[in-house]
Image (cartoon, rainbow, N blue to C red; front, side, top):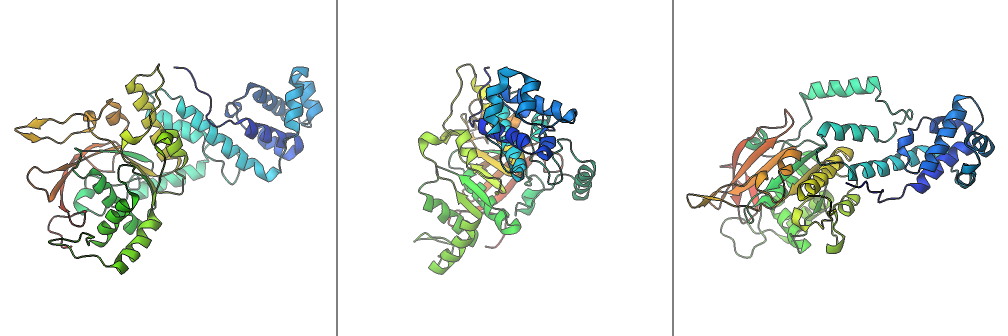
Amino acid sequence: MAVRAPKIDSKEHEMEILGMAMADQTVAKDVANIPRDLFYYSRHKAVLFGIQELVKDNQTVDMLALRERLGDEHLMTIAEIGQCGLHPDMLRQRVDELKRIRFQHNVANLPPETSYEELQELIDKYKPSSEEDMSYIPDKANLLTKIKTYAKEGGLRTYDTGWPTLNRNYTVAKKQLSIVTGIPGHGKSTWVDNLLVNLARMHGWVFCVFAPETYPIEQHYARMIEISTGKSMLHKTTRAKKITVDEIEEAYEFIFDHVKALVIQPDQRSIDNIMSQVSDDYDGFVLDPWNEVEHFRDRSQTETEYIGQVLMKLKAAAIWKDMHIWLVAHPKKMYKENGVYKPPDMYDISGSANWFNKADMGVTVHRKHGAQDWGEIHITKVKVRGTGQTGTVELQFDRDTQRFHEPLTEF
């Protein structure tokens, strides 16, 4: 598979960083510590090598010294870079921006068989600089603190879903990817909305949601308001109370503050464009559903390779942005057993076994046959110890308020 160039050109970032080294000798020492593979252009790597050699020999870094070190063939590049120096305080910001560009470039070219551990190594390599220094090696004391926190938490920190019976099988942790599937109309999107409302109320989480099938957008927010209040907007209802205008306004304030809907035109829905608009200010991101993404697959790629690559991008985004990502995908196959549809799993999603292989958590939402007020939540995969266990949990479903709730719970 051909290696693709970065979608965001790093030329200016590289020139500005090198220009700062030529303008300030103190900054030159920091620039000399930057690994050359952070730079994309070979001529810029050559200049960085020259800076590193000059710093090592305790020589002044300037245009003349670099020309003598590198030769006349680099003269134009050195002269061009010499005009790009910024204030030294901008160095850390530019290095972090360059790391993000290089990280995106590397992830775009990862082979589908890349392991979780290899991805984590890539993320660690391109993490933003610390406030103390520009070291690229994890700090010993800081790492020990994180290990102690891990031990204190009893493993990876997890968050209560709001359903005690479900918590035994499924909890939410950041830096993870959940794949949610289920037969169309069985409530997988509604279950995700319930989970978001619960996490927002219990933990103050803020979400970005791209759900183009749940349009118009006011309908989506109306559903979350019903979930939040436990009251219905329907004109005719048999059980739930009718919500008032004041209650709508109060619930809307809360929902809008915690759930941000992302609206993207159909011809701009590539996975790269979608994720570029999801900042690391969010605690979670929902992409619902997979088939609404605009897919660009190289001719040299199989569908399995493509799906594996995209899922690795989402996993990388979850880790890099410190969030949980839920990806909703429809199954391609639906089988009946004794005349009843059996719950699909991730192997039933169109395209690839990578749906199961790359997921941290696998969830199937299934409506019990002949029982419209009951939903089965099948946890089909739990990758990380301590975040849950495979199994099935039953939740009651109130059609009037769109709420999933514990069995026998009053509402």
